[in-house]
Image: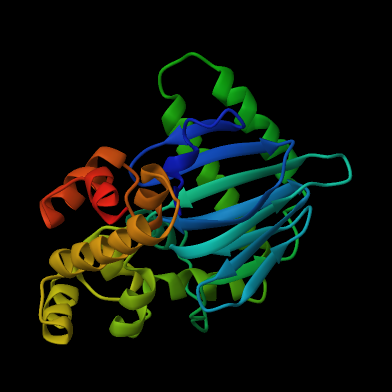
Length: 287
């Protein structure tokens, strides 16, 4: 599983317009589709599809399909993402990622007050605003400038897009969804952890995804599992890793990824600390 947007920063098919702790703006252009990529989207996101189709499946199994010329919104979470090429054999999209702090400021500055609140992981807005073509073009022009203040201008451009969306949000559906992102959706802790312990997530990520503050998560976790979160997660990952080393032909890189380690050396170190030998040494003993 990859962490989005971080995993995309160095990809050759991505143009990164803006990157800050609270806001990321990028353009993606593919000539080869991506199918069912397991992703942890670490910030709330807007996906605007220009060519092709994007399918986003939530961890609960519901599907968001974003056709060409439409945009989808998703709260941070674990998804399966597919980018399908258009007849032109290209997939093209724009993406805006924003955290809770940015969301809070945005709702306040734009005075967005919905008549209702929708608790949903994903939301489809059926059409990109008609004036957005110029907005996309301006992003590329601004990106080419070599002057101070460019990042401030990028932030203003994102706010401008939200203003356009607000103007077209006559039925208040988008406002209801955005406000819903502020509300914690409390998930079953036991079920979630047993399903996702092998994902490359931090304790803070697990707390957020299960709808709890970090302190509440740690307290409830200890009461439920009898161990601190990090210790239990490491134990589960190492047990799965041992089984994969002993009973499969996977290499160390694949095993590390399968148990939630994106850094191979960190995985080998954790395995040796837990079992007293490296995965390779353990494998030789099993033969």
